[in-house]
Image 1 (spheres, rainbow, N blue to C red):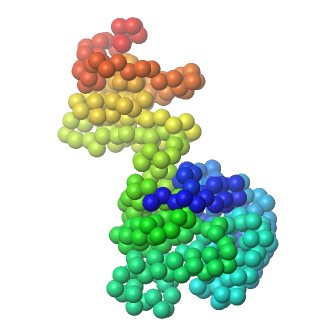
Image 2: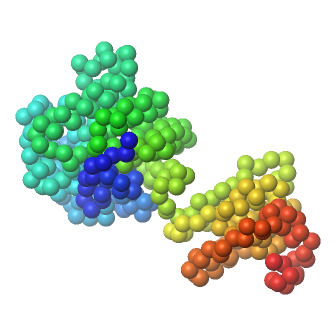
Image 3: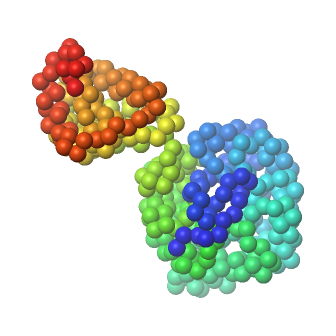
Length: 384
């Protein structure tokens, strides 16, 4: 079930029907203010909406005051084992703290952190991780790790509720995608708090992106999840890029263009992979949301990608530019991409108005077959 409660992390609303929030974590030593703020700026530019910083030492906690002041997005302090660091982080002005109430020093220390969070009016993230379950749940974890994760999380929930604190989100991360999916489904059925999704320690950009897309995407498709982090062994900007692609693929958020490209086949005589790479690179500079299709021929691809705002279909010597289900023109292959972006730029400048599509319009493949008979030097009215 979708979360009913809503919390705030700085100015970002999470849960209760708010858009799914993208977050990441800095890799720099937090005590290095210049490096950390530079990385936060890069993450924010990529679309990160909330950022977490590790606070393992006093120097890191002391640096947070400057980092919070310079950061364009809310900063969360990641705390483990030391409640005093959480108190310092809260005093430094962070928007939230991530703690594990089970390893912070006992109920009294948790109470101190909760009191400080209440006083500062900030939220928390709590939850369990498959690599750090409490000792008393190890036996249960051997039988069912997903259940152990949920039990651990619910123990933390009960502790905070007993202290009269309710402004928190929960995570139950695992390195196993099936375990992670089952755990979140079980937890979502038991609580109304916002849930933070992630496959922990997912791996390198290739395998980690796939694991995250499967795990996070499955849950989001179920209506479960309010924030997410794609955990990759890579520059954290890559995490943000993958996170947004997951949200865009599910139609949950919009940020920049979506590209559709055929997988290529024996009919490809233009090198569709090369075309797609070039188009994708140029699309990165567009903040607007629209769809562009890149096809290797005019057989099936244009019809399958007919809902795209713009598209190109390559040929040996010539290619076709089409928009909103209609063929615009036939051009020489060497200027195909430039012509595509010329049409996109004119459309964007004109207000991105999408024309009404005629139900009886010719199939794109047929229209392109007819357009193939038009000379390249024909006038615009002859081409269309």
